[in-house]
Length: 226
Length: 87
Image (cartoon, rainbow over all chains, first blue to last red; front, side):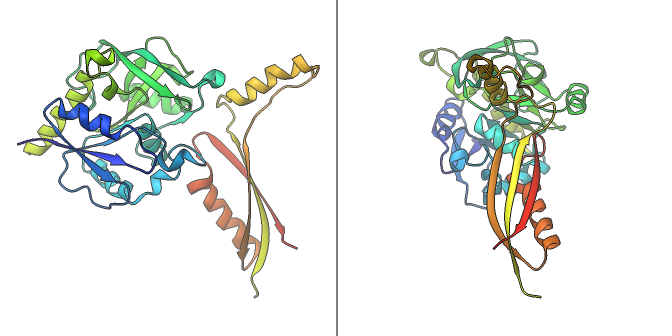
């Protein structure tokens, strides 16, 4: 049975087709989920893709969190469904309260478009379960408001609960504790600023996004078999 | 009770302790222009609108609710609400 990954598309999303292409290469089927739909259908996992949902007016993700699809995404999260938010998708998931912390403007007010090195800090999450702890992955970033921030209590909780999924080897944006990606407490919801879907072919300069997306597809498959 | 109209100003600013790259950049630029005594620059945003409600308390409660749910992200932003009866 093929695993189906639902990819949320808001007005202003721009990475949804890249995600579908990337997961297709791993044997899964990608399916677009329109933001106005209030059903996810029979998907086994959800990716909230990058872009500028609803133009990012007010704040990135501030309007997107009220899109009808987000209520079902929240239900899916509560039921343990695997969910990954990439870049703008990460911002949407923090605004929706499905992930801790927030994303603020990069230090130096620089829009960053480059490839960075990420260290896998935890293999407990749906995005890293098939990756190797301590592995260093080269994955592109492309953001202006990508510095993860949270208060010191939250940071201590993230550390002790093993919710820090990925760290930058060389912090590009001023992110608290070099955090590039975090999960919720259960590990089934993950957000990250880097774009694993853009690191799935040597032609794109890196294949290091594959272990991450492979983890998600594997987890989706495990959910599907249940 | 007849409905009352209020002019509302919501001032949004980064919470204390949250880095503010815009404020930092402005603060660094000011000495170059000869303004040497400036410190603590923070950049936020001002949101203005009108609200019609039965009382000032009800209007304030509604605006505070908007701030929490939508106008600010309480993880990184604070807000102050000013209400004045519309003329």
